[in-house]
Amino acid sequence: MKFTVSQDSLSDALSIVSKGTSGTSTLPILSCVLIKAEDGLIELQTSNYTTSVRHRIAAHVEEAGQLVVPCKLLSSIAKALPDAPVHIESVDRQALISCEKSNFTLSALDPRDFPEFPVYAIEAGVELPVGILSEMVARVWRVTSKDTVRPILGGVHTTVGNNTLTLAATDSMRLAMCDTNVETSSLEGNFELNIPAPALNDALSIMASAPSIFIGVSGKQIVFEAGNTCYVASRLEGEYPNVRQLIPADCVVRAKIDVEAFSAAFKRVAVIAKPDIPVRFTIDADAGTLTLTVISADQGRASETIDIEVEGEGGTIAFKNSFIHDCLSALGHQEKEITLELQSYSKMGVFKSYDKVNYLYLIMPMRV
Image (cartoon, rainbow, N blue to C red):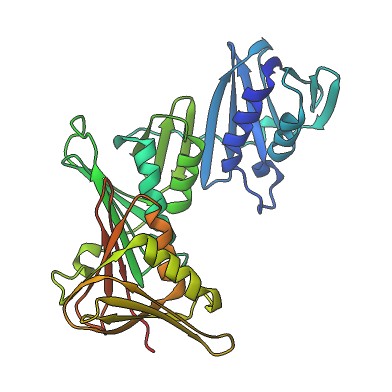
């Protein structure tokens, strides 16, 4: 095998397919990249048996063939090379790499031992805009569960239909949902899929520059496609819980809170709080204020009061510090106002914001 490719194309391609390598496996070949050269293209593949990534780029191919080398090492070399044509040739289980005055020789593995790229036949799929999908995933993925006992909760439940895209995630202690309008005229019926959060994040990361991404289902596999890149991951087995039934139909307390003031006050009182310490929310309905209080046994006490608009009776409820942090992180800078709705001061709280992307964050209270 012998080919020439631009340094930036090679570096970018290796960065993309590196998402499919394994850094923990005892099988060396799973940390490698398979390079196939033929007909003016080189195809790079990686696999860790759970995910597989394939990416194609243009190259000047003098001799067709295949080569398997360590992905991370080749990526480091490609990034360090000057912006000039890179020549790669395989000779006797070795990869010879040259670029201007730089020369490298890497040991290569047998391509016959490399895992086959998954063969798939799309059963159902949908094409979605990358930008809006990435923004929505950023709002909910933190809420997915890391618990291996219920792996189904490690996914982002995705529903598309009636010109609406809805994402949901839960770890059984909280629920995050968001929805927005998308064009679905080409979609027959509804599309519903529970997508593993790591796979969804990786696919959106490597396809971030594409205008849209295709998400499809093939048996026990999920397929992501955009441009010259294909990412295949294993599906999560099981039925996703009906999380909508957790959302209260009404409330007795509704507080409208300025996001900027809320975020600033929370950051200050949380300075002395560990992630699992409760943050008290004390609402004074008569004064129209919200007081955030943190009491730490070994650090001390902090509190700050902000003005709010409130309907209902006053009281105190507490939420886990890290959960509130995730809520504010998900909001970003575009929302000006968020609403806190309570059935009572002893039951779950529901934070809501409405914009181009509507956001809901349901959280269980802590005892104080």
